[in-house]
Length: 467
Image 1 (cartoon, one colour):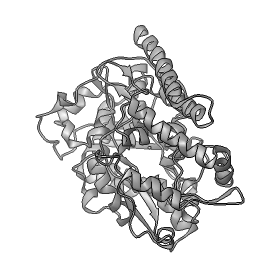
Image 2 (cartoon, helix red, strand yellow; image 1 turned 90 degrees about the horizontal axis):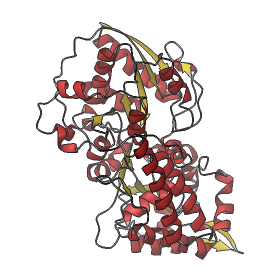
Image 3 (spheres, one colour; image 1 turned 180 degrees about the horizontal axis):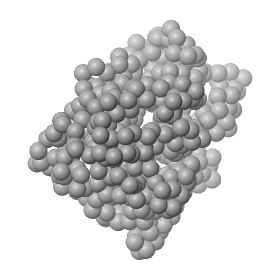
Image 4 (cartoon, helix red, strand yellow; image 1 turned 90 degrees about the vertical axis):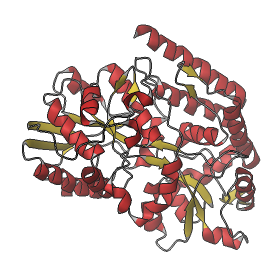
């Protein structure tokens, strides 16, 4: 698996007035829609920080004031305000000015403008796949020296969450949350009505059950077993199923785009076969009442009201299920495994960094260290936003909400992250477009993914040449 378009609003005394809720699903859907690119090259090996000492628990002797821009609103914002107050209480030498600020892939211009004007905040949240691009573009400043001084090492964090932060020989942020993408939700009642007792463990079982639980009457879909390309828009659907099939999207060592990997092509061929079998336009008509674009589609609602039998979804959809069907009987398990491959998952999530030109980077680092790499801070923050911390040593994992427990084994075995490249936005935009071309029969899956590969590689080469 950034969210709804949100206006910037101060949240020092006004937390209770904010009512919109940040949605990781909207973040994931929005990530596929843009085609912007940044500049930079090279990666920092994950082993670069191995073997260092554990992080000291005592706060650093930083002082002064810092301005923090963060993305949480509504009930999450109010809960997060308490975490900010806890930081302030435990760090009396640091005066904290915390401000809610829109932070997604389509509305970061305010931050960019602030950096360009030399008036940035001291701390900002950034979506994981955007970290490398923001770093090499000059929006974030490297935090290598702080990480080294703190004794942090790669193994302190979930591996994919950590790997997103490394690019062009630098560390650009720390992981705040780690989203396990995705849990496989299944409707126990619909399964039982069809005489099916257990969720699918393999891809073939899933494919068979999806067809058994799809109901078509008078040419119209009444109930559907699975929505392969509605895993938070085309691009995220493609990487999700592409990895399930064992494919690869990028060679980090050589900066080579590999969207036309034969296993990724096979995954798209399967998606297209589903579109042909039931009719892509008929499926679109079926889903239209629940949102007419990938960024507005409410997949959790469709699942909750019994129109969708099973689907990869994130833990944020539990709120929708509780809202639309409080007594629903459903299960959450790992993604079905393809052939002899292990179950596949990938990680997303928020990270926190220091913008270039920050006036008090030392105090900013202490805030980030406490929020992202201390047992106490990450424990409180994780409970406030109801999401897994990127830091393995967090107290959160001893007190996690029951709703998140089914996702913990998924997080523990997650293997992938979206490509770490300054062309990531453009890549996701191209995937979104070319998957659509294949689904609607404008191109074969192989041609669509070959075009995506060539377009992104050409774009990336141009960025690397300029850097």
